[in-house]
Amino acid sequence: MGVVEDLADALARDAIEAAERLGDDRLVEEVAKVIGAGSTTTEEAYLTAVRVRLAAARGRKYLAERIAKAEAAAESDPAESPRS
Image (tube, rainbow, N blue to C red; front, side, top):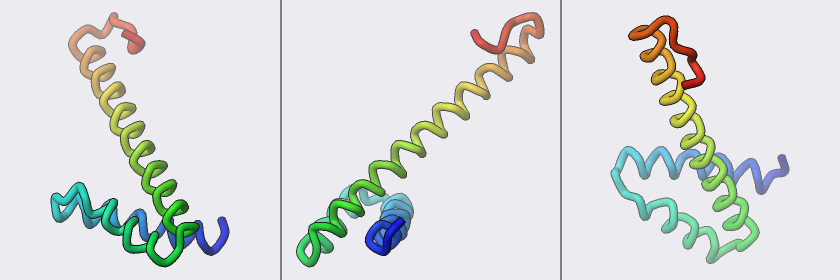
């Protein structure tokens, strides 16, 4: 990635973590407004990084839930396929 993308991704990671710790869903948007006032290019890269990171987190959570469900089903009924 380029400098803009690297910096925006690091900020996105930090802002998401801070928002979770503070319980403030609007923090990510507020950071976007602050950086957008100085650089729309950085704001766009930041928002893209936020969307990608949040989507990946949702995907990982879904995958973990599916694996846990399949493992629980296999433990309760060893003959059952993990695809159910």
